Image 1 (cartoon, rainbow, N blue to C red):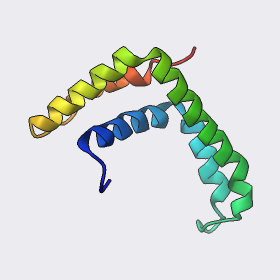
Image 2: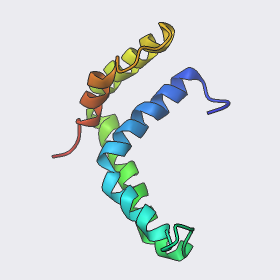
Image 3: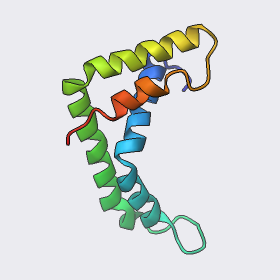
Image 4: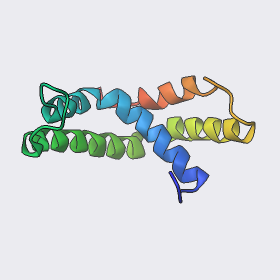
Length: 106
């Protein structure tokens, strides 16, 4: 992520983790739509609806999270920032990341 500050990189990683959990089905549909039987790129038009669904999921998750999950986000961010400052510790922030990822509409 060349050109991004550490803060922006951490934000991207934290939200990416959440999208990976909550938008998994939409991403899977996109992957399926764009593949041909031999594994190559298929018809881009066939992937238009799945891409739109995935982007809508990302938008909805982001909007909800910014309105309702600030405490969980801040905990995840602080854990990640502190982990980077200490040189990184594998799995140190899984609990905080999961707490943020699980803060969603029911």
